[in-house]
Image 1: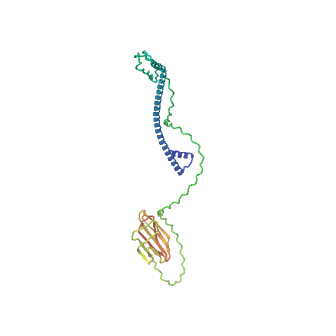
Image 2: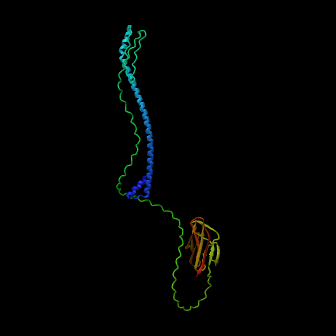
Image 3: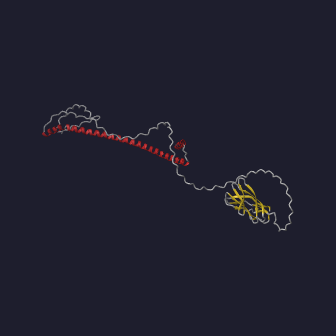
Length: 369
């Protein structure tokens, strides 16, 4: 979503986002998504801890309230007992003096019941001390029940409770209306130039193109005028014996040849079918008669292989033939002028290791001197 927003903003403002900027933006978006996911996970954990702390706080508050209520009740009871004991002190002193002087007491009326101070149901007042058995008179009549005591004073205000925790987040509000498009910002500074890339690996040599269409025949030329007969020349001196004019050979491969890839190989056509003179030796034609020769060779290669072959004259290429496994076979014809001891051979370079060459031939013959 953030990537789409960034692209839309870039399109509106007219800025061009390069592939590098786009990849950088993608990395930033992924990083922000990870951070948001981490924050959501922590928020869930904090909410759980918040609920646990609220439960503990409620339990602690109930315990504090119980302790305060019990402490207040005990303090009020102690105060009421001390007040009644102090109020009855003169009577106890008078009763003690009478016993010491040996006076005989007549039956006394039951004293009035002490004041009752209530918290909820009221606290019962203390019991009068019991007299000794020798001086005790006859049991008096039961006195009238005292009136209900006044309501005790209101206790002090309790301490403030522990503050509660923040509640859970509310639901997201409705989506606001789309704002107006902002003003386009100024163009940024030009970035630093990128580093120069490394030199790439050389590509593979492409396949040979299809042979071109045969051109239309030219218009016949005009017949020239007959020339004048020349003067008869003088008879020449007899010359030495001229070499035979039927120089040439024809050879082919007698077996399938497998060669390594990307390395030039001199092809040796081992089966010689026709030879005039002693011109062909171990795959190399050595010229014995100067003149113009017709040279032709044909190749058949295995599937998936491409073989580039060349006609080499004294180590230099003067003709070329490329055969692919898709077509399978191909041939080439070259006219070449040779001098005595000039050398011809066929060189082949396959594009795959283990390429095979089958049913191939190499032929040359003298056309004219």
